[in-house]
Image (cartoon, rainbow, N blue to C red; front, side, top):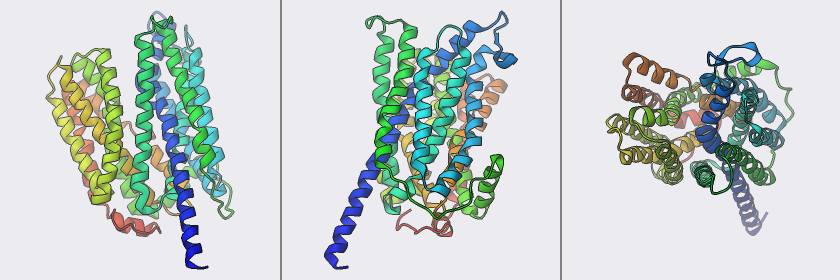
Length: 448
């Protein structure tokens, strides 16, 4: 093959790769609206109000005859969705790796989640059980779809591009979340001028996230392509597949060491995200409109933060940049401890700090893990990564709750989360990532 033909072939492959990467970004654009508008802002308070309207005189609802305090129904539904996702992800991941047909599985998971979210339009009255079922289905489907989506990263980006590609994906997601949140908040806060009730506005906001998810999922499903793999044995049943995945990961102890570090510091990140509004309302005495505006600020700045940290990783390497972000998380929490009550401007400063490190921490963790996955086992290993991301983030809320229970101070509770970032920093610093990449059978980038 002559030089000109090689050059033409290489240019064509690069163009195809860029097209596939652009399609990949759009899945983050499609599904992040669910996380932002549905889970973070609207569904929790709305589903809780429905459960309370259906509760008995003692404040309990009785799904399947089980007495559940109405105020706990949303949290229990989220927990159940995590259990379902943990059971399903290893099976789907192994099936995707064995067949090489990730795209049909991604489409099935995405549209299951989008349909369940769109169906939330029909929540109302005392239909709390319908809300719980739709939440479990949507949240579990989202976890499965994200696992498959993440597993494409090693296949669509060579090692030297992964930090930038992963960061752009996160940036797309946060941009979409910000855009839809602005639209939803305009409808919610001005529902009278639109001629709809507050309840109807919430239902429209919930359903619009599902419609957005389904519409934009068409872009990645049209551009991503399946990679054929040699025939392998069928997937193992039930928990045997999860056990097999864990056994295989034990053959790569450095990959497992990174996953442990990620589990710890990501638990801290997820807890800060979920508890910041509680801290703002209960400890700082801030109103709902202030808290919603702070969520929007986090979303907007997370776009810039993800892109900026992607650039930093090109200079300093992903590992050093993540370690720097963990220092920034620690400083942010320390500053949060001293925030004065009743002064929204300082809470916005805290939100800005969270936004700037949030997207980059997550994007670079994903790209770094992609280097540590043995070839041909992308979906299977990313199922374990997704379980660390979504299924194991319970220690942080437990520590937060216990600290508040023992001290009666949300300030003590928020500062207790520093432990996750300090321990995560120490564990990640001890992982020799270059050797870990080589042990996984992957080429080692010049800078990592």
